Length: 253
Image (cartoon, rainbow, N blue to C red; front, side, top):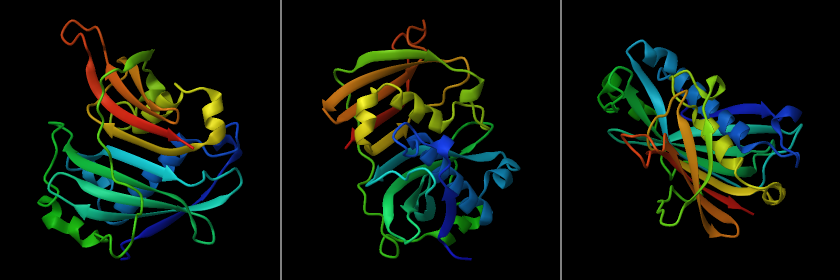
């Protein structure tokens, strides 16, 4: 079986924002669907893993786009596994035009957890290390964007606190990875989206669940770059500062 898959996508009008470009959250969903389908075809999909009480959890995602696809355009998402370590695997993506030229690229890091303990699993010991058969090295297929950065928060200010509901929850029972992206981007004014998003990166730190309150803290890096930290249940008697569930960076053009 080929190690790299490509998935065709048609950009529907109801999947674009007021500029006519695809929502970052919708693009993120396409990337995660491509990852899921790629894993499923090789016996590492959620359906098979759930039978042994395992599932994939997204740890980090960085998307960098030269241009966001527009409505009615046909695009392809290409995905492959770049490396596998004991507790994490690196998966890359390319978002391509019909002629094969890139709109942009993405990098992601995934962990597999035990559904009972919620603890990470040793990827190299599962299924006799079968996952190693699907690695495509950087030399074989290049993903030219930078890796995942680090976040340092010193002067972050509270921007918004929201409740979480049914539509925020995914099949794993926690707040959906993409929902965080959508809520984070809702913090910014309309005019910034008129220029388009250049890069979005997010690091997931802890799970949150339906009914948790999410507080969003922002820290300006420059006119075009902002860091965001999301904490859950700030003010709770056990953890008055809340618990960090994810951190993100948004760069506009």
